[in-house]
Image (tube, rainbow, N blue to C red; front, side, top):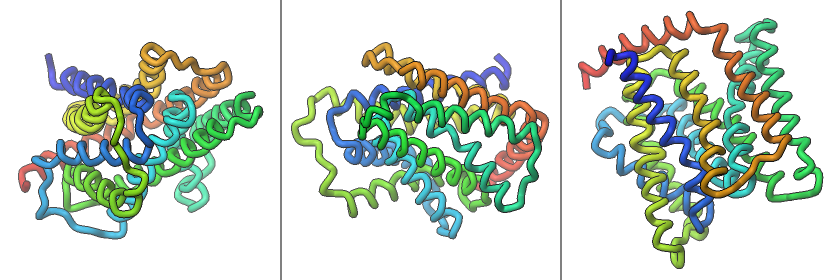
Length: 301
């Protein structure tokens, strides 16, 4: 097996593990805050052997990354508890729309049809999901979950923006340390909402699976994979996560997405794919440069 195929296998394995998030979160009989806290703490422990503590340096960009990642994680867990897994994951994936709008407003991008149309498709998908009669009937929990998932998409866009910045740390150190910070912040400010007493014994297994496999090991596999394939290929393979997530929940929990959710889901997914296709060559060139830079950096660690 050549390096490119190995990279694809690593990413597919990583994405499959990431896709178990919806299933595990819905299966745990604890508050969303408790789940987010445990997941981050356990994931941080997985990253612990790889964190280069002497390389950690705080900056405005890194603080922005910490805040966006923390909000993204917590809001996604809460949204998954309140609304369907399909809505929670696909609304989180609307990041390309918000990032594009920010660049457009900031004057960093011009209005080009081939970039604008995919974002309109994503927006149409969002509107379709929010037009679901389930929301119109006054289901407060579902509406709140959808709004939280949408805000998670904005946080995801911010996270992508800050991840593009230069840091004196490798990616594992960046994310691993953030998980510890997030767990600490939650313990400090949300300790009253963190409780595990009385939960079924099997839920502890689910929490461990969330932290170790759904976040920790999956991220290690993903980082190994993206060094071996182009950015375009990695992005396309990553689209399996929003597909597999609700599929796992459907088969193991029995949660069936509504017709509106499936239509909106399809529109958003198509829009995301369209955002990737025009930039294939540019993404490949960028990834090649990143690979060379990563190899150079790893020699210094």
